[in-house]
Amino acid sequence: MNPTSTSNESNRRHQLGEILRFGIVGTIATAIQYGVYLLLKGLLMPEVANVVAYVVSFLFNFVASVKFTFRTNATARKGAGFLFSHLVNLTLQTVLLHLFIKVGVSETIAPIPMFCICVPVNFLLVRYFLTGKDKKNHQKEL
Image (cartoon, rainbow, N blue to C red; front, side, top):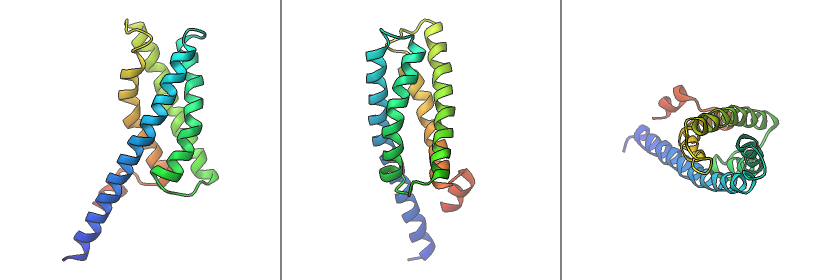
């Protein structure tokens, strides 16, 4: 067997594992965020409730992403990158949530399409900042 094909297969398995672990962590973090949002939306404006919920889920997400999803060591640089990627994601979420509510989607349902857009964007950002793997490096691995 060609060593290059073995290496490529190993890289693909590794990448699939990252995606699956991201899905598990992301599902839990999203459930935490959505649950906190639902608890707070009657007390706060929906956008504010979402920000508070996001912060709660962010704490879980950072630890789980470093230790479980990408299996890397936490450093100040990676933490700053993770924070930056999540600030971008939070901004995108806030804009989309407001937009969906503005066009008539109920406050209870509006986070669902928001998550459908933001989760893939977040995966790419977090992966880049925690592992340094951008699209160019990803293609070299294949």
